[in-house]
Image (cartoon, rainbow, N blue to C red; front, side, top):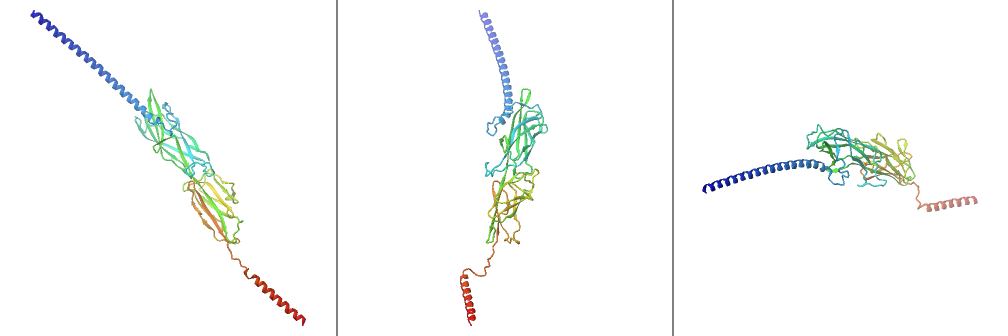
Length: 392
């Protein structure tokens, strides 16, 4: 009996050991399965993070809902494998401010014919295996304006395919040429965001920034002002009906030219450019001018106003000589006969001619009656003496 119990106890110990080993094996398999699941989840998390990073690169420049960027997201999905792409994201605009705002009255400047030029230079490539030396060249179309037009579409041209994902940053500089009154803009930042989409590199975003703000236009301002010249005649011999000729000379700022039309209104007579009589304006010249002398004819209390003069233009006023015979006027007196045209300001100038002369009557009108009475009395005495002589 004792031997039977010993055998039964031994069998029970063996069964317990087997069960323990089986449990350990299951736990090991579970641990392996759990480890594999964790590794797979971590890989998925890493891949998702990479995808999110790429998406964030695009979203950074395309998912900002901003009224300054009405074309937001327009270029997502554009494949970059094609060279010589054209991306139309900007309009060049000329503003004509008067006292800080656009107006529709006659004082609003008319911008001249103008060509704005741009250069784009690669400055950095980030989040990419590409470098500034492998980034594609980018050019920007000229913005060509005819006189008085205020907007022009321009294209950004990508010369070759982007070589890899990343953010490509270019600095854009503007060249306004030598047009007087034209105001340049600050340098701009142009960014292209390229991401991987399937087997293709995709241009996910294009952003243009100026002073840190996203913009979808490049805006320039044309500044202009005006000049009013008045004629005044004084003195007891000053002739209010006489025509006086006055030269007004305009000079463009150093290194600049005037390309636009200069309008004028006058109450006076002829306005001439040399021997050419003008009709309401100084016409625009294709090649521009640096100096222009206009001869105006004014009588007393008449004036002429020149408008659309580019800001920065200087002027001088000089009257023809009326001090000699037969006119004999005093030397003219000037007010504001030189100055510089300022934005949205009307400069004022005047020329005064005086002609006074003392009237030589020989006698004063106050004693004339008494002189006449004495003359009559003397004539009466003479007549009386002659009569008496005849009687003798």
